Length: 307
Ligand code: NCD
Image 1 (tube, protein in one colour):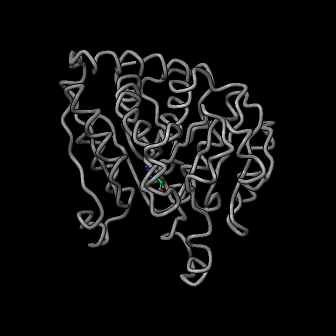
Image 2 (cartoon, protein in one colour; image 1 turned 120 degrees about the horizontal axis):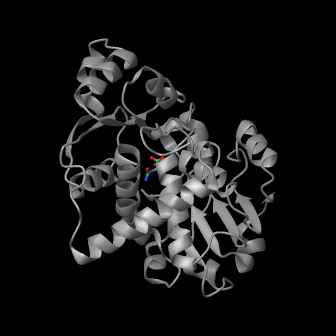
Image 3 (spheres, rainbow, N blue to C red; image 1 turned 135 degrees about the vertical axis):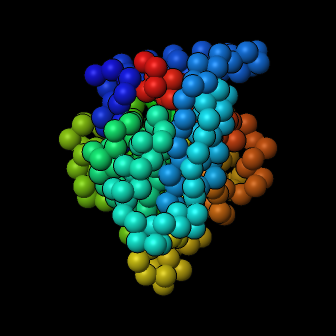
C-alpha cells in the first residue's frame, strides 16, 4: 500500500518499510526547516482539525506542519464542537468536513472513532488519538526520535513506564516497536495499570519480547525510558485515580545506575511523573521529541496528500 490518499488509524496498519519511508521524508523536512527553506508543496490544500477532545501538542504541531508546507487550516477544539452539543453526530460532522477540506485530523474520546470516520469520509482521516486506543502519529514521531537520537531502533532495550492501561501514546509506541526488533521491552506500571489484555495479546502475537519489571530492577539495562502520565480523564472511578496518582516519579537519584546514553522520552503533557530536575540531565529528550513532531507530521501530510 502507498501512503497517498490513505487514512491513518493505527500504527499496526504500517509496515516497517513504510515507516522507514516516512523517516526519510521527515529527515528531508528537518533539513528544509533548519535551512529555513521549506517547499510550499501544499499551498492549494486545506487541512481540517476536528478535535473533539482537548490537545495542545498534537493539534498545534499538525497546524504548524500544515502551515509550514503552505496549507490552510480550519477546525475546532472541544467546546467549539458546538454543533455536536446541538446533537450533530460524528458521521455528519465528518461528511461535512470532508467536503470542505483535503484531509481531516481527528481526535475523539471514543475508541474506534477514527476508524469509523475514515469509512464515512471522502478524504483521508488521520487519527490524532481515539480514547485509550490509538495514537499512531505520536508513535511515528516517538520511533523517529529514537532513530535520530540513538541511531537505530533495533537491538535496544526499552522500558515503558506509567499508565499502560489507559495511555494510548504508550500503547501505540509499544505496538510500533513490533515493526522493529528491539532486544527487550520492559513494561513498568503500577498494579492495575498494566497493558490491557487485548493489547498484550496483539503484542505477543507479533512476537515482541515483552516482560513486566520494576524500574529499579532494569534501569541499568535501558537504552530508552518512555514515561507517561496517569490518564486521569479515562478513569471511570475518581477514587481509583486518587489511589494510583503519584505512584511513580522519576527523580535524579533513580537515574544514578542508568547508562550515560539512556534517553528519557515522554509524549507530554507531564504532570509530576518526571521531576523537573531531570530536565537538565543528559537523559532528557522529551522536548526534543515534541520538536520532532513537526518534521514527522510534515512528512505525514506530504506523503498522504501528494505521495
Ligand atoms: C498524549 C495523548 O493525548 O494521548 N499526548 C499527546 O498527544 N502528546 C499523551 C497524554 O495525554 O498523556
